[in-house]
Amino acid sequence: MSAHHHVQSPATTPDDDADLARWDDDGAQPVQPRSSPEAWLRVGAELGDRLVDLSGRQDLLVTCRPGTRSGAPAAFFPALGEVEFDAGLFAPLQPHEINPRIVGDEERYPAAWGVFVHEAAHAAHSVWTEPAGADPRVVEAALLLEESRVEGAHLITRPTDRTYLRTSARTLVMPDIAHPTLQGIEHAAAVAALILGRRDVGILDAGETRAVADLCEKVLGANLLATLTRIWTAAHQCADHDATTMLAHAQEWCDALDTAAPALPVPEGLADLLSGAVGVVMDSAAATDAADLAAQAAATNAMAAQSKAQAQNRAQRAGQRRKAAATAKSVFNARGTTVTPDGTPAPSGNPVTGTRRPTAAEQSAAARLSRALRAAAYRERTEERTTSPTPPGRLNMRAALARDAQRAAGSVPTAEPFTHTRRRNSPTPPLRVGIAVDVSGSMRAACAPVASAAWIVARAAALTDPDSLTATIAYDKHLTALTRPTHRAPERVTTFDATGGHHNLGDAIDALDHGLELSRPGAGRLLVIVTDARYGSDETAQAVTRVKQLTTAGCAVLQLTLTAKSRHLPGTTLLHLPQPSSAPAAIATAATDAIRRTR
Image (cartoon, rainbow, N blue to C red; front, side):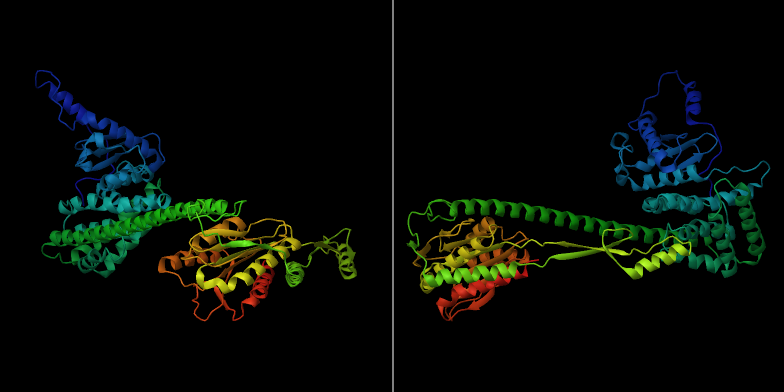
């Protein structure tokens, strides 16, 4: 089919020709062009390094120079242990721009690399040699079948090279189609072997090769095409060293053509028809590769964008955690001063009016809540039962008899008659309760009951478990800690008034979250927000973002409202209290439920 093959016998080298030509002039060194053969020596050496990985052979030399002595874009010389490569395949790149030793550099010249991979496949798998006296026509047919066989064998060990082998098909096959040495039916058969053979080893897709398949079936006939398909499929299974079998397939190929060709009419302009069909195949493959490359680039860009977004989110969350830590440190100060959102002391507007001794009713409520929390936190001991063939443990007579029967029968005893029960105490979860109370002017009715509830919850939590913590923050546009995270039970009730304006619930939640670790699992976690939620849009958005983060982390968020005009903060569990005095009982019930749900 072709004027050349990619497996060549030794021939004279361009170096010999250059030495002879030098005698025709004055003996001076010729002027070297910009892309001289010497400039390509490094490229050839680096290709040789990569050839070791591609072919698994370390005994090969790669020569890269403009033009080749075989006339092919590249060729493998088994007798010389050499792969020659036409530097023109790298156009328009210059030698100093090409670094094959760097893995991934081949992505800049996929066509050239595809040809190189094809020659590497020959170097690895075209190791059979033709016997002396073999029919040249049969050898020609064997080399034709070898083209797709070596690519299929290469694809088994290096499936990721498929993209480059698809590209090489456009570089290697099209010149052979445009300048055929075979004519008529044999030309069509060779095209079928080159294109459909690559289809059957998985290089090209069936849909891409439909134009050639249809034309070859029309020219060769269904029976002959089926016979040729069977031959090249059998050749694909041939071992690399099995010259006898490979030549037998080639002989069968020639016999099939000799038998069928005389009876088949040759369409007018067959060479042009075949060239057009192969062009359609190559265009289709190029379009598929371009679409795959675009999809891969889109996926890579999407992953990069997602990774960038995740990094930005992590940085944003880290910044929020640092800001929350700073806010918590400034709010829960030892002096109980009111602070601004940036952590500096507020010049005025402290809602705290003083402290008082708890009433008997509050002390009784704290004791009841402590007992309820202790009961809710109680966990039954876990039991783990194991069996063993030897003591200690309770003897199971049925298992003992079964073991004796197994031993008497001469089999290996598998019954385990002793049962041991191990009981372990389950740790009781601590409680974390944060209370954020709105002290804007519209919430004055909540001040007394919330102050009472804060003391009751803090007292009960401290008496229940030394690891339990509670805290209460009053917020308007500033923040004031009414109770701080501590393991000590408060002695007095902190009273406060609601005369502020604006709202800063977002920072209040941040301070409570950091101070009480409301986002960390392992404890009964509850955030109670006492507010009518009559906020501006920005204030609401900041609060809702924090609430969503807490609920996602598993913290229960309860909103208590006292008037019918109150609004619902999205993400919270809304509880309307017509009587403000019922706030302590509602908060106590929510805290008990939170610790009961902890696992």
